[in-house]
Length: 253
Image 1: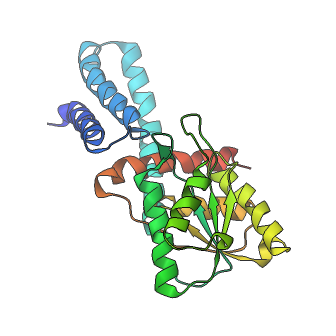
Image 2: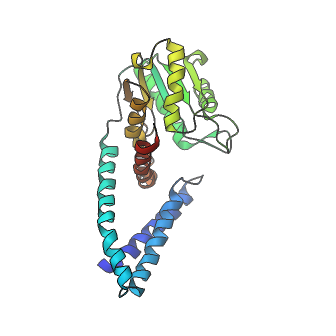
């Protein structure tokens, strides 16, 4: 059974990719990478049988094992951190920062983005929050309007006063969400970002990295109030987040 573990895992990954694309109304980011990994595992299974006596293949196989084990260990550690990181804090703050999550068909909220806005509304109504709401997200190449404008329109349609909403519509990734929103908050409050309390609303898997990037861009008094990932999307989103954390550590400065 052990010799078939790679081909079995490959079939599982390909099957999961097909399920993702069947259940989701839009293409799920990173799903193609999972499917590609599944194909590679199946090809590797047959390749190792064909080259089992090749000395170069044997050497490469033995050399890669320690790297693979270290990678798996690091992945597991990151997953434990992502899953266990605190995600629900009801403490009142001066500002609520809602991170963008893309639009579909040019102007429609993605399910993830709608969940974040609904969570914002739920928090405000549940805890009588009088916070200013910063909606953060620029316009992608496949979008007809900035995410922040679509977010603001949704909140206004759900009884949030327009003068309680601050629009940041230039950012293209999470790091810029915090960087550009910081400027908006400082302009609005007339004080440094370190002197304002900010609640970050995002999706649960995104909590740990959001905290890292917020601190890196100067936020001090922050906490999180997150949405929950749709169950069938947990494997792909949580796996992708591990890679995003490494990328943020290395390049988001």
